[in-house]
Image (cartoon, rainbow, N blue to C red; front, side, top):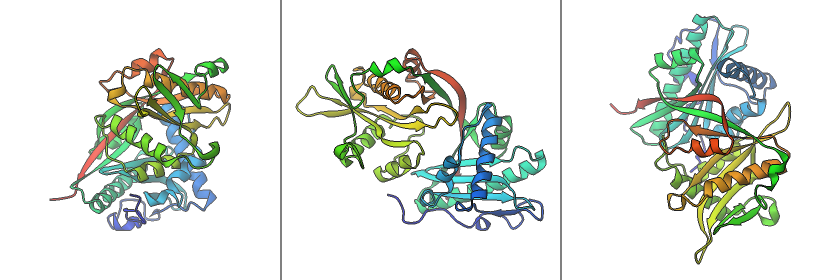
Length: 362
């Protein structure tokens, strides 16, 4: 369930030593989401982090507000390091993602000298460990995982993560596929089509607008929970947590949710689900993104995954978009990447998951 108040400590001073090791006139605090200057500075820091790590930046102020806005703060907390002039030099963010899994954002000004940058980094790591203890204890856990990411070529981030006892645990291919206008005909209609006893359709909404049918949303959630049970780092997420989190995505649209159902029995049976989002094209056409794609084990071999992928491709083409992106577990034994490559996806850049387990009992 979504808590009334978040499970984190809102005062950074409660989690850090009296002397955090920063210059005497530097301060540790929290961002003000209502201050355009704070949001703009955090956006600049995030974009510089992206550019240094993978070669280009695409973060926007909307992405920052997902982390620091009042809505997001029911499940999140943030910390800032400001220099003597009040300029934000480092930003840490934590997200109470699901039971036992806390996501962590770690961004330090790329223009700082190495010694100052490292001291900022140490403050962020100490704060994140303290927050892991807070959220893990609130959830009644013995161990709280901190889950953070890094670009594969970001040597500075790797060095800091290793020094803070994080372990590299997974590699992810960030893939993209071009879309052409003629691919709008890949399926009869992205709203609903059928092939060999499988129906592919958008989640139902009253009159095609407004909030979707709750039963359909629950079906999507149940399919994804079941499909990913044995996947890397899967952790149980309640329906309320799932919907709340997915709706925070800046590209969220209800008409980008699809269900696949087996209809060769007495009643339709959910077999697969795809949750898509919009990729903002600030300098050109928008794209679509596959946030989640899951197929129940009992339905595998019936073309469900390919049918759902063809549906989002056709939908993207019909909307005038030029690409569809997705993330692939490079270390998965399922070989799912073979389907994506066969359907035209290619790796654009590589990211990594780094974890640290924080014990909460002696």
